[in-house]
Length: 205
Image (cartoon, rainbow, N blue to C red; front, side, top):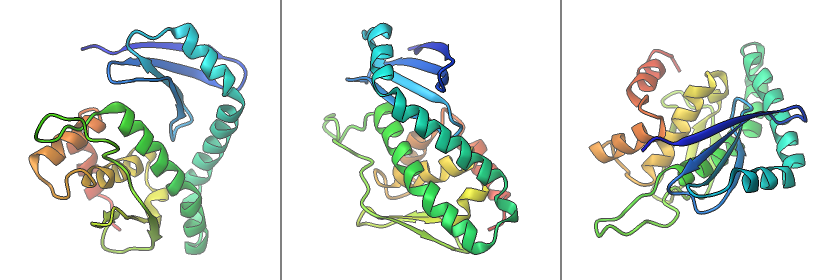
């Protein structure tokens, strides 16, 4: 099924807003991507006018969040000149919030079903996020649904940072590298899992 999308340009600090209708959506949601792009998702038979009214009702906080993300993105681009202490500080500011945004995006984008065909409630739920200066991996997760992220993720291109976070969130559903895990991660990354994984492998920790 082709998704129904509409892009509207606003001059009030929201920028170009993308409205997308998802068959799985049950309500209207607004979020800001790591690139500062405002996106609105709504049910398949929802009204764009209603979605716009909802966006305007929360517009103040969205504009503030977009500004913060754009400022963080600028800091990321300059992070190559930062000390280890400064990178760690930046990581504690960026990674927990971005993980939450990826959690919300993934929860809205896909539905996980169990062996009986029932929808699994809150499959990407996580408990605690730990940020470390790890020299062996970019991220990991535990059986207690805790996620560990490498602070140096903030030095990666944003698409790769998001890929690592999505990888760990997918492990909360499938704690292995089975075909189902890769199918899920590929769906989350819009078919780019292998490309992103190859790019990440070329970057030395």
